[in-house]
Structure formats: structure tokens, C-alpha cells
Length: 229
Image (cartoon, rainbow, N blue to C red; front, side, top):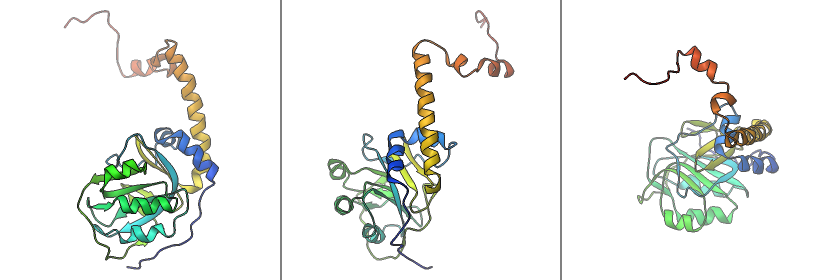
């Protein structure tokens, strides 16, 4: 197998990235036709944190964080590290020292389909992390991998330069070619939800707002005055 580190990648417009970050995971996921969501077993170390940035992808050997160190060299401010491993693993592949290094190079956060460690220290640094597990088990730095290649992380294909959004609801990937459309559709969805929220707050029923009464009727659901049971 050939291992490589791609030094330069195409990144989307930073203004669009910031707009996607304001929209959040749930809105963007729905706006994209319910696509791009990573498996929900990835959880934030601190649910109050959120992040949005450009994916720098890393394919690593399980229990080996050599390629994470290598990836930081090619990162730019605003990037998010996206780490996958070649087989199932929960070792603590990322800890406080790597977080310090990543932060120094402008990395906004980490999504890793494996484990992390030093979570108290990482939280104190306000460095956003989403991981499969928390584990004190350490790693080695001995096995080659690749940086900035297409990877599958938590069941979703992610290409270098895609936009990663993560918050308390999970993690979603926006393909870089689709970023402008995701912004437009996400903002339209927010406007629609704001109007619906106002109607619900005024007392209207979701049954009427979403025209669900015909659906109930078609499904054979009937209203009765009282139960005979």
C-alpha cells in the first residue's frame, strides 16, 4: 500500500464555512436531504463546545498516532483534524500535548473514530473533540498512514477540504462542492423554522401546520369521544 501526505488541498470560502457553523449540525443535515451525518457513537468531550472547519483527513494504523503528528505540519488556521483507523480501535490516540500542538497551528478541533485521553486538560483548553471513546491507553508512533486522502470516518466518506460541523447533536460533513448550496438551503430552513416556531407558540397545532390530518385519515386513525376499554 502506498502512503502519502498531501501538502496542499482546496478549501471552501471561509465566509461560507462560518455561516455553516452558525447553522449547526441538525439544520445542515436536514437541509442537505438528511445526508452527511457521521454515526452517533461519536460524542463530544464537552457538549458545550462546537466547531466548524475544513477537514484535514488522516488514515492511521490502530493504536498509532504518528500520522496525526505528521498532519499538523500541513494544517492551516481553521482546519479540523478528521482521524480514522484501518480497523476498530479505542486507544487514546490524541491527548493534551497533541492538542497544544494542534492549537498552535490554528487547528479548530478534532473528530476521531478512536479514543482520546487527557480529556480534563483538553476541556480546560477549550479544544473541541468528538471521539468514539475515552481511554488512558497510550499509543506508539511507528506505522505509516496517509494525510489528506479520502477516508471513511464513522460510516461517512470525507474528502480533504470538505467542511466538518460538530456540536452537541453530533457531526456532519458537507462536501466542499456543495458548501454554497448547503448555506443557502440551511438559511432557508432556519427562516421557515422561525415562522413555524411563532405559529406553535401562538397555539396552532403541528397537525394543522404540517397538514397531517389527511395522513391520519389515510392511515385509518379515527377519533372517538371516549374509550370503551
